[in-house]
Each structure stands twice: as structure tokens, then as C-alpha cells.
Amino acid sequence: MKGKIVIIGHSYHLKTKSNEFFLDLLNKHYDVEFIADESWEKNVSPTLEYIDETYRSVIFWQMISLNCLKRIRCKNIIFVPMFDQSGGAPKSFWYHLRNVKIISFCKTLGDILTGLGFNVLNVTYFPEPEEIPINVEPGTCFFWQRTNMIDWPKVKRLLEKSDVKKVHIHTAVDPGHRFVKPSKADEKSYHITYSSWFKTRNEYLKLVDKSQIYIAPRYQEGIGLSFLEAMARGKVIIAANQPTMNEYINNGFNGYLFDPNDNKPIIFDNIDQVKQNSIQTIKVGYEKWIDDQDRIIDFIEAPSSRNFYFRKHPFSRYDYEAMGNAIKIVIKYILPFGIVKVIWYFKKDKRWKKILKEAIKIFIPYGIIKLVSYFRAKKN
Image 1 (cartoon, helix red, strand yellow):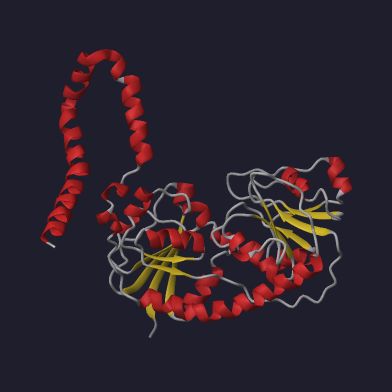
Image 2 (image 1 turned 90 degrees about the vertical axis):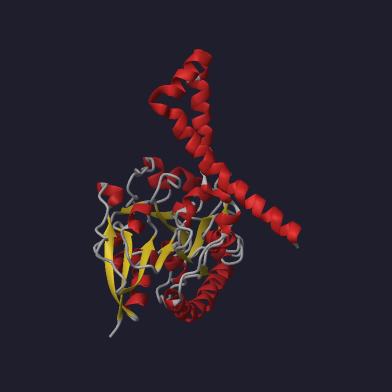
């Protein structure tokens, strides 16, 4: 009998199917229960109280919260963060997750979290290479506008010095973004065609197959399934020089990278050789991905280990930006009223006690650690 496992993921992925490869892997080894987290849309947290020790593990895919963790009785908890969402998170965010295991599909993020004392498994996903028999017309390009960071004006700039004469634009933008429609003149110059959402994934891929070039739709990715699928189908990728794209693509060798802060036209040197190198990258990477699947299962089954980084660096648990903003508010709104007003402010509702307790909470543990370290060093 297979063990039970829960995976809690972003409800939007029910539409995009971007975590399907991971669910397929888990289904080979476990009875998998998927819970769609709709809190981003409906502000309602999923029901998790029933998850107890009978479950082998609980895996949070992309989204996680401290409130959710407190309601789960299973102790083997894994978080699969995405660089585009969590790559810039402060240490204070990671402090609350310090004893959670991490599976990272982005080496950049995985290395950051390893440095913060986390138990991290770095893996790189590659889709299976596809043999696409159709002859692709040179100078054709597929662009999926998912966000407003990369829209048609930016794409047009990238293609300025290319031989691209036909562009297909997929208009299914991510929630919170709007589609930027090309001008009539551009539609005519680039023979632009459009599509919206498809009923099946195969319908979408058939359109991708008709183009020579594929533009990765976001500046940063958690995994980058859309551009990886295109690579696996022999497309030449244009992408921002950011994770995870620059963890797969070597500029001018197996794709083309551009600086998102300095949008310059791409020079398409040796595009046919770049395509062959791209296909070879996928073939070699897919073989490694097959081997890594066993590592993922072993990591899920392995016991958790304690993270001591935040004990050694106690101030890392605090959000310095939030603390700085609080100080600015004090200076801006309290001090101008004078010392008398300041005294009144601290006396009201016994605020001085709350502030004193917070100061003790912040500084005393750090002082104790310093004293213990001092006497240990003196003893040795």
C-alpha cells in the first residue's frame, strides 16, 4: 500500500498545469492528495487541520504561510519555493520556515537557502525531448505575453535587427496584468496573428511548433516550464538574463539572453547551430532529470534536520526594512510634538512596557549568546 502525501499548490496551476510533472512523479510513489490554495484570490485559507502523522509528508508548492504550518500535525514538511516569487524574500520571512525542508528547482535560490542553514535539495527539471517533424519557416516567432514586464514594445525592440517577419502572440496574460496590443502598422509589418487560451495543451503546442523563435514570457521564473517545453521542441529561445533562464541558457550557444534593464536588439549569429546546441542541452538534461527523480523521493522520506543559522545570527529573524519604517514614523509623527508629547505617548496604554519587552526580546538573547561564546573561548 502506498503512503499518503499532501501537496498544497496555487489554484491557478489547475489551469496552467505547470506542476503536473511533479504530481506525476509523486503519483508513482504515493497516494497524492492535491489541495488548491485559493487564498491569493478569495482570501480564504485551505482546510488543513485534518493532516496528521498518518501522512508521509506535506509539500507546499510555491505558496506557504505560518498560519498553515501551525495547523498541520504532520512534521515532515517540504516547501518548493519559486525564484520569481520568493527570490527576494528577506531573512525574516525564511526564519519562520527555518526547520522546513526545501526542494529548489532554481540553483540560485537553492544556494541562498543553503547559506541560511536550510536542508536543501537542488534539482533541475528538463522535459523529454520531442521529435517535431514539421519544417519550420525561418523568421517566425512565438510570443506569449504573460505579464506587463515583457510586452510587444519590448519584444519589437529585441527583434529590431532580426529577419523575423511573422509573429504569433498568445494573449493569455497572468492575473493582474493586461494585454498590450500592437499597433495596426506593426500588425501589418510583422504579419501578427493572435490566440487566447486553448482547450488542450496540444493545441497550444501545435502553434509553438510553427515558429522558429520562442520568447520566454517573464523576466524571472520559478522553473520556466513554458520556455523549457519550447526548447524541447527545437525552438530557439530568447530570454532575460535572470534565473531560471540563465541557469539553462548560455548566451549565443544554446539560446539568446538579454539584459532586462538595457533592452537592446538581439544579434542572431549562427542561429541554426544555436538550435542544435539547444536540443542537445535538453537531451543531456533530461537524462539527468530521470536520475534526480530518485533523489527527490529519498529527500521526501529523509527526516528533517534542525536549522541553527538563526541561532547563530539572531538579528536575521527581524525585518530591518519594517523596523526602519517604524523608526521613520516615530521621527516624523512623534518627535515634532516635543518631549512632553513623547512622554505622554509612551505612558498611554502602557506603551513603554510593550516597547521594553520588545527590546528585551531582541537584545537579551543576543547578549546571552555573546556571553556564552566569550566564556567558552576563555575556557578553551
